[in-house]
Length: 187
Length: 277
Image 1 (tube, chains in turn purple, yellow):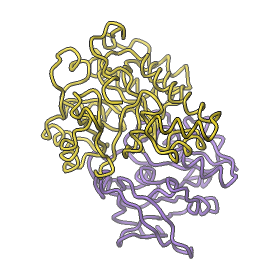
Image 2 (image 1 turned 180 degrees about the horizontal axis):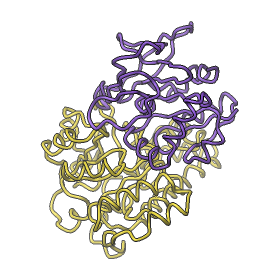
Image 3 (image 1 turned 90 degrees about the vertical axis):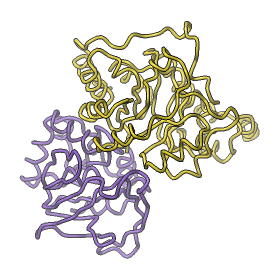
Image 4 (image 1 turned 90 degrees about the horizontal axis):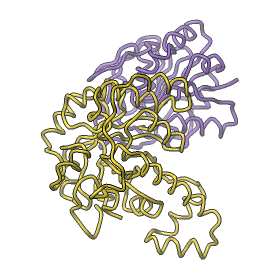
């Protein structure tokens, strides 16, 4: 099994580092040919406007949607990746998303870089709290009935799952945490 | 989360919008682009907060702004404005001949320029969260950015062959803590994200520096001093992402309207890279 990390922009290298530390095969994904070779996909943090543009230009957006609908591509999106998975994006200059999770997400809801913060999250089914970072994070403001909430912070969902699509608004990878990646590998 | 992206200098909200649409991962708000500062002379300062506010209003990507080297009050103003990053920049006139801003005391992350490893580590020790090469801003000449990036990389490799005593001497000479030097020696990279800046004018320039190991690119005068800023901006974004793909580079470079006029380094009256050390 090979895990792909969308590598147009953002912290794809940190995700690859976490995957390598788990001894799973992984590769960067920038084209349809790359996507063909992977069985799961991580969409990293970065600027969602930038990534949305490249997803569209490369034709990866349509192929990703097709494979998710077929059930052959579990996806994990972090931060900007979560924005790109949402059915609806609110906030200034919202990018076009892949609409793979029935949720509404508010882009940059926590504010600028100055409002970025670190915290420990309690995850459903996990004993130890997980140290994570919220960096110019989006906020999940509404989820549909079929969406499972796996973690919340201050009353808002921060890690959600619908079918084989997982979305988190925080970054475990910048603090070298692999718990969410291990969870993703089991979906 | 800026890695692999292009950060563009803008002097108006309209330019910021063009940059965002072209795929910039952040914009740098300033009163004049470096090539105008070079041509017009005078003291270059932090830009009017109103301009920064106007830019913050129209874009959703991070907004950075520049302060003069050592100008803590300008940094405090940008902190109050909650810009996303502060660039303590040699492109502006130096304010403090003795010291840089104590960046630990300001809650906004800083990016600082460097020409070599010692300078990069002094800035990191002062609290910089991101390093960029200084290059030679406003020239459209990439040679100095290449020089600084290669020098930093080479000096990091050189640390490997130093004995503990030599390493300690090097750290003392560079005025940085030995612990920081040991960390860099072990990791074989700077502990912060490392971008390039200064003289990047074409998509091929951006690709060259990414190939040399840059984690992203700042483009100053290169975009809005070119004949077609929108196309130039888009092409540089594409080249930064697809730097390994020569066919893609050929496509985005073909028929691009004239880039900014360039300057030979030897003919320059003022070398901005010599400001701050």
